Image (cartoon, rainbow, N blue to C red; front, top):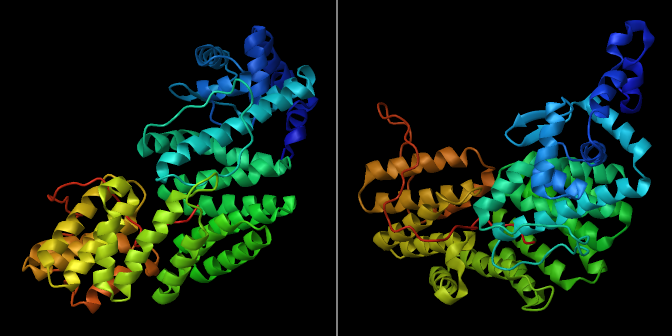
Length: 478
């Protein structure tokens, strides 16, 4: 029973009588299908997809979405698929084995390979399209071959739509990485995790990200591709940093640096150095962090196919944060204000939230708590509608508490601080660096357990709601 290839054989043993001869039972339903439905049934089982829907069937079967939806309903009505939710289906594992057998018997190897390759290509290109809105501005991409002729992918109108697509396809993407690695399609096995990591990071699925990263790294090493290996080590370094293991993160970054230098890829070297800057920042080595960010900026191209506006802007914003931690508050303020200039377009993303927090700290250090309050509140307003950055929301709340306390509003400060603390408790300790900076400037965290007051939740700010979020916890550079 443990061996998938012989499971139906075991269940077809004569000893239990003909009523349990499953191939016979399944064949009755299968023979009643028209050829189009039977063929889709066979091809679906050759793909790694586990969560079946009209877009999935369209890719695998090569037919239009409306026709694919009708065939899926036909298969469900024949009890060959189970409808898990409206328009979403799954195989029972034994039915899938039967369908795969029919595929091997009735589909040519070329037909099965074409369906599987279309699925791989769709996962890669659709993930690339979905990842774009999650990290802006323009960023470098994992190199992909052109899609097969006729393969249709969709564009996404913003991050929330992209996240919803990822939520719907998550099970399929995870299964596809494992399938590709098992079948030695190592290009897919390392590139798909490299595209999916922003979604896993923003949705807090850090264990899945680490697991996919291990598979990707094994695939890149099996290819003996130093650039793929370096990229994957870089991603794993950030994953370990997010999980709270800074020593392991450092080892991955340093190994990544060796590989990308050996590959002669200065643009990717700049991305690794940017992440090393983040590691130094979290370790409290702010001067070294600044050096890494500056080195990265010298390597990252400003235009051309390897242009990476995301990492360039990340380094520039992170330098503003580093200046604040080095006590260079006026330099931090000037850089943040310059980067928030409307023509740069950083008000719309996570980077702008970080810049608002930097401005809040700079004004707080200059004994201008009213201005600090305004910037922290605007940063917090954005974090409420930006999925996947609890550390940034915690930083905004901590800054808000400090400004409220300085303005003589102890009850509001306690509410903000308690909400910040609730978030910090869910995060690795190194994410609390902004609190250390605020306390060095005179902030005394309020008593968070007053005897009669209930524990409040994060207050929704009444300050103007801007259009921007943060990495004073530096984000991954890729």
